[in-house]
Length: 182
Length: 118
Image (cartoon, rainbow over all chains, first blue to last red):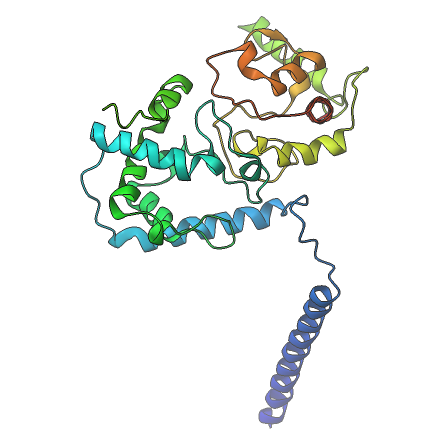
């Protein structure tokens, strides 16, 4: 009778899977509970882990931003307004052309990174989505509850302009009072 | 053309074996410099061998630094110049987009030691 043989094979396969699962869970529990994982920001992710997390973030943002409706972007007034919002809320961690982030932005892990190349990786609606919802476990806050709709879109409009700004342009646009002088 | 190829081969050969070894007379602690390169956010703009991060081309990639003749467009590539550039790039090139990051002398020496040995 083949049924006995098949039953034996199935039982063995299931027992092996359950055993491996239990062993893996126990191992993971020990690693976590013993504190073997180094949570310090001075140790880095392995590059494949970092790249996987980053890719997952990209796919997630891309998918979630598809329903965002983009208003008219890029008027001079809006960009100036965005420059002021960027200076007050973003530059501390992201810096700008020729301008360093604050110390906390420099040593965050993952590093917030420059935004001068952001428009090469993201569409405006995706930048808006990230600004509005933030990024879990990265330190990027959700600005929805701290900035108005206009401020968030103005910031996106300004970030879209960053690639063409020299260090001097950036300083001029984000100078205190630059917005009032428009 | 032939001489160009020969020159390229020579340069490649010259790099063989020596690419991960710092030239003599390099000061500082490369291991400490590697951590410092992450802690000053260098990896945000520059790809650096051995330092985890995104694919990024905001600043130039910093691999094979020992093979460079010139840094920052004008300076001969040696450790003191590299330290100067890391600490105050805008004093050397006022129009550079690289900001002044408040790097201490010791940290800059260690960073340059890492870069010049990888």
